[in-house]
Each structure stands twice: as C-alpha cells, then as structure tokens.
Length: 366
Image (cartoon, rainbow, N blue to C red; front, side):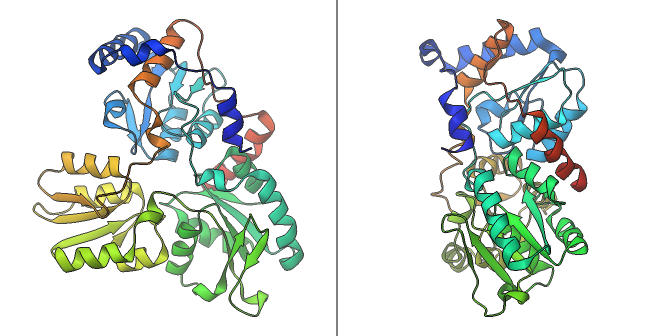
C-alpha cells in the first residue's frame, strides 16, 4: 500500500447532505465562515486548483511558494491547504507548532510523488552504493513525500523546485561526483542536459525492477541517475502535438513545463516552471498567441486573465490533474465547518523525526 493509500483508509467521509446543496449555497456559507474565522484561517491554493476553490484563496502559487508563505503567517490557527498531500506535508513542516494544517480531501494526492516510496528508495540506495560507492548525492523534487525529503536530508542531499533545479544540480555536483534525482526523471533529464551533461551520461533507476537502465558500457561515465517517475499530466504532451500546432498555427509560440519529456521540451520555444510560464505570458506583448503545455485549469485561468493575448492548451483534449481536482466546494466547506464545530478533520501532521531531516533538505535549498 502507498503512503497516501494508508491515509485514505483512515479519512473521514464527507456527509451526504453536501451533495444536495447548490454551489451558491456552499459559496455563501464558505464566505460566512471565512469572515467568522478571519485571521485565524489561512487558505492557500495551488495554481492547478479549480476556479470554484481558487476564488476563496488568500494566496495562490506553486507548492513550495505556498508552503513558505504559510510559514510566514503566524496569526492563523488553521491552514487549509488546497493542493495535494505532499504540499500540505511541506506546509506542516514549515509552519509553527501551534498551527494546524488541513487537507480538505485526503484523496488529493500526486501520482508522481507516489512513484517513489521510502522502501523503494532505501533499497535503491543500497544497490547504487554497491555500484558507485560514496559518490552519489540525492536530490528530490519538492513533489515528493516527506519521507523522501527526509532521506535526502539524512544523506547530504536537498530538495529542488522547477525554478531552482539548475542551481541545485550545480550545487550537488560541487558535493559529489554523481547525483540521484527523485522522483521525476523528466525534470532531472532536462535540467542536467541544459547544464551540459550528455544524455548518454545519464541512467534511469527502475524501482519496480530494482534495476539500473543504462545504454552505455562504462558505469564510470554515469553522472546522473534519474528515478523512473513522471507527472501523469505533463507526460501527455507530445512532439506530434507540437508539430501539428506549428503546421496549422505557425503564429503561436509554444511554452511547456520541464516536467514534459525531453523531446517535447527541446521542440518547444520556451520551457520553465509554473511561475515562469505565468510571468512569461503576463509580460508578453498584446496580441501574441501562446500554446501552453501544462495543467488545464491553469491554462484556462491564464486565458481568462490575459484577454489581450490568445492562450490555448497545447493539448485541448487533456483532462485537468485528477488528484488536484479532488478538492471541490463541498470538501472545502466541510473542512471549514468542522473547524467551526471544533472537530477539524484531515489534519496533516509529519512525525518529528521525518520532519527534522526533511527540513534539513528544504533548508539546504532555501
């Protein structure tokens, strides 16, 4: 069973009466509770959340940005984090002891984070150490569980974001000869390639087969070991979509997230973090046209916000992130009403030992 799965088994069920409420009724009640709690409540929402949830956010941002902002808020007793499980974990680790972090729906997970559990990682570390000795530094994308962050903290490594991945990979190579990049192989590959590392000097660790996949013949040439994980949304963008778009809409510029495959990133005009995508489009000239390779809720929100530009999805048939979209009006209202009733549900609390080492990994980055 996955770590998230164990949480889901113990999650409280939302009462049936919420399904009979209209969106307007739920919105009105949420506004009433927010006004009642005032500064005692802080409600951050990730960029990929539904508009029905984002409208109530005190702040929107990417995962680490929201966790850091939450940590800076000392007034709120409750942080109701509208994102996914690993984000709420990070918020709990960076928040203050008197604050309670709540995830409105414990089923809001991340398939990428779930692709590297601590048992697989510790097993891989034993095998990789046999092959390479004490020459590897682990780095983990913040899109990972608290236990994976703690593993990196214990073993001299750190966390990275899509915004600072290049600087963190440079830092890693100042510490050790090789790095293990968890859990997203695409961000790791794209970052290392941009820093001048050849593809043939990268290998992939398959946690299911417990096996290193390497096309070369000399293990000594390996500089980067990529965990075989990916984002289920960003991996859906293809070079065929880009080719078709360029053929039919040559006036569009193509911008994608570095969680996309190496081939897609190389075929696009621009690539960068969610923040980079937002800022690039925000600062683009009026009248420009953009095909965006990232989560659909964000693309639609950008199109609605920047009406002086034409903004479409690179894959218009793509579904929004399914786990990110689990948080809806009903779950948000249920979470807030439980706070008012003095019975908060879905509290996210990282144990102290895990928190200690995970914070070391986070602090090395920050």
